[in-house]
Length: 135
Image 1 (cartoon, rainbow, N blue to C red):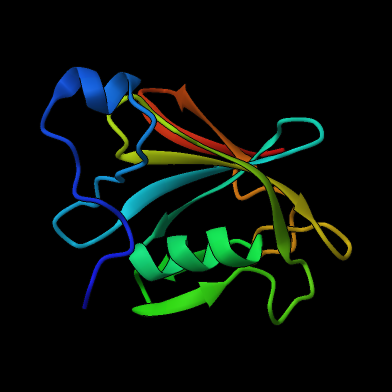
Image 2: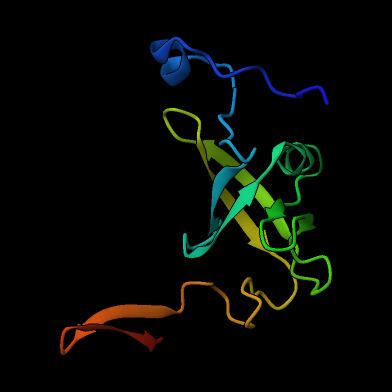
């Protein structure tokens, strides 16, 4: 399969300061995507994209991801109606992680549990053990 993206640049300065987007997918062919609400900045989820998911996201403006557990392409919100319309995509300095700012359609939950965010639990230490507390 031919890549839709250029090979990552080996020149560190060009990679960090240049204008060419050349994502660095990991050995499994994935790149991490951090997803926040475009309106208030709330962290909604962390997911992964393969090349096809990234290409479809850029082409359609709707977030697509790669499900590592199901090993399939995943158009976020396709069954729930809570599609994620991408308003901005950023990459980090070495282009191996993405930040998507999205507007969520429907009634707004992003998490499969029905919550707005997948990050609904706080970790704390109690009597030497890590415990979870729900928001």
